[in-house]
Structures are given as structure tokens and as C-alpha cells.
Image (cartoon, rainbow, N blue to C red; front, side):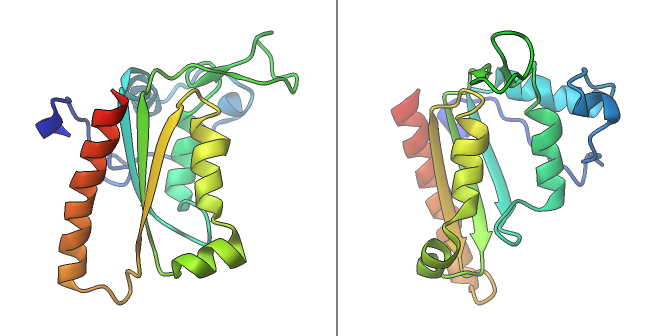
Length: 173
């Protein structure tokens, strides 16, 4: 991303010791008291491009990532309601992010994922979270099959990532 002229911020939830558990106040829509969660919210609010990387864990993000989604994509920072309260109406997305790119790894063949499971990660990221928060351009790519991948496969995947990021950002910004 730096080669494309962007300032980048790497957020490694494990290295940062992020606590994925919502507080009672956060569940009720209050501001967070956690400085790291607030830092992540501030970074998200200023992001032109968001890149997310995680494995497919039983058709969903891993628990740490799900906690990040719950705490960071919060009411008042990523979306809001017209009447300032969740009365079941359609939210207003607050993010200024032009494009989000989500990379997942999987051990499920693409056809089986689509036919048997309906690709729940696609729905979660595109419809249930990012578009809900105002991100109109969402690109998602899955690298498979990780369990039997070779060094050559993984090098090719890294080249694909560069290409996907270049294409997604140059077309959208």
C-alpha cells in the first residue's frame, strides 16, 4: 500500500493485546473506555482503504476478529441512526473508506463453500458490516487450500495480493 502512496497502519490484534470482549457500556452504545479500541476506531474513521486479513473459522471470522468488529465498528463511530437510537430503522454509514479489501484463507474448496455453505464470510463482510457502515466498494478474495499449499502457492498468493490491492485502490480512488 505504501508503494501506492498510502500511509499504512498495521494492527495486529494479538501483538497489540487487544481485548475482544465488549464491555457492558459498549453493548449499551456508550463510548469505549479502552484506549486501544478508541485508537482502532480513530484509524478506521480516517481510513481511505481498509485491508483485513484472517482465516475462515467455521464460516466466520476467528473470535478475536469478531470481537474487533463488534468493538470497533460501533454505533457512533462507524454508523449512526437518524433518530440517534436503534429503533430498527436503516443506519447511516459514517465511514469515509473508499474501498475495503478482505483476504481470507480457507481449507474448503470454492464450489463446496458456495453450494453447501453459501459463503457466509462474503455476506458478513460485504452486507452485514462494511456496506452497513457506508463502505460501498468491497473486494474479497479467498486463498485456498491452505493445508496442502506449497511455498510456491504461497508466493503466488502474495503476488496476487499486490495485484488485487493495486487494482482495487486505483479503480476506486
